[in-house]
Image (cartoon, rainbow, N blue to C red):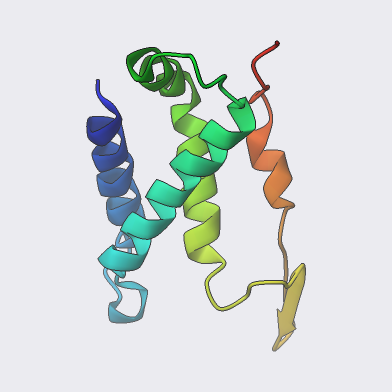
Length: 113
């Protein structure tokens, strides 16, 4: 699987997940979701801290191991649109506590040098 195939698959999976209840208010903003998926890939790649001499093909293959991390970061970032900077939200007796974004990078370790 190539990088683009992985990102397309994550995008399609999240699009289905977000549209799952078929309510008009929850329709996915595809442009925004695509940006969040690509940003999540870059953030996980940055966390891995690949040395510059690593071949791009090797990096892309290694990034496949972080599929679920990329998907989780993209989902988090998409769902957090409009609530940036908030750690919790409360309205009408309902309280939402957001997890820390850093916890989505569990298992993503920098390459040793």
